[in-house]
Image (cartoon, rainbow, N blue to C red; front, side):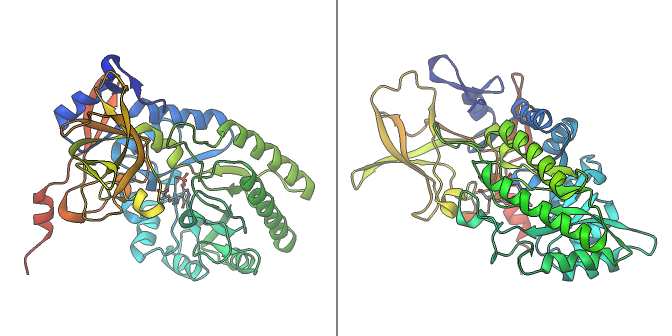
Amino acid sequence: PASTARLPHGGLAVGGVSLAEVAQRFDTPVYVLDEGEVRGRCRTYRDAFPDAEVLYAAKAFLSRAMARWVREEGLGLDVCSAGELELAVTSGFPPERIVLHGNAKSPRDISAALRLGVGRIVIDSSSEIARIAAAVGPEGRQRVLVRVVPGVAAGGHEKVRTGTEGQKFGLSAADGSAQEAVARILAQPRLELAGLHCHIGSQITTVDAYLVALGRMVELMAAVHEVHGAVLPELDLGGGHGIAYRPGEPALDLTALARELRTALADRCAAVGLPLPRLTVEPGRAIAGPAGVALYRVLAVKRSGGKLFVAVDGGMSDNPRPALYGVRYAPRLVGRASTAGCRTATVVGRHCEAGDVLAVDAELPGDVHPGDLLAVPVAGAYQLSMASGYNMVGRPPVVAVHEGAARVLVRRETLDDFRSRDIGG
Ligand code: LLP
């Protein structure tokens, strides 16, 4: 990935800072986030989608600094809880540029969204319509989108496929629930229907599924126009743009996606006589993922069952993705000049589960030993944001690196944090 350039003598640097120095100053495990890479990725989206609204999906990774970078680069924000929303707003994110998602919004989510004044709330079930309308004050009017199931199967893993019938998200267009929700919203004076939304899945590496979804969404917009005379100003096609986790893996071509979506949208709308809606996209992984590196220290090396096991000081508590989705990473040893004598190693975490495996085919120098530093590239998305307190190891800090300088964004979770939440009883 672009964010990890090789230094002389086999060291690795990110954002102009050597990873060995980061480990020495901040200890391990530590998540390193390249500010320039995040900003650069935001700009790539702005350039590829000049007429669209680009919302960064905060679930991939959110901190106050991250929210600030994204805002400064001209993106809006997709949040899915009062927590993400409040953190973003307290960091100065303009609430009108925030969209609230969630298949089961709590009363707190809804009241925070209305109190802070989010731009849109995405309706995910029909019972939400009355709940949100009732929570809007007598003078107020909330803009909403309807999340539609377009009936498209796409995504890197079954657990992140969200465009098909029979999964928990959205309202089906095939069985008429989406159309019914549209009618109810249009009849609801406290709500304003701004458009339709779909998010078909995550870690998608080809454009075709997006084009199928777009076609179905425009059909539905045309039907809404025909039945109600309403022209919906926005079409939100969600995120899911796939990235390469290991060398040689495919990634979604953003320029091709942007070009093909623009052309298809113009063609489809012209065919059904609709004016062009504003397009919205919601990338999370593609912005944060490649900008992060997880840095671990090797704690143990052993042979077992004919395999070389290299165990590090983190694992499934800071990155549950291998255990959840069976994904594998490409760790690299920091600070070794030569890759001669490399062996295939299984890189594992320190947690009390056999499934705590980061890589099964890491090419590491044969003399890898405890004390070595191991860098896992493409670690910026859905790792720390999904981290847990398992085994009371404590979540790693996030260190931002930029133009040769490093600073802590989020501090390490300590034993005191665990102790202070445990109030005895
Ligand atoms: N919009 C909505 C409504 C979403 O639900 C999501 C992700 C996104 C946008 C951003 O998707 P992205 O561009 O990041 O793929 N934990 C899984 C990924 C779950 C994605 C959930 N929704 C993983 O680690 O692969």
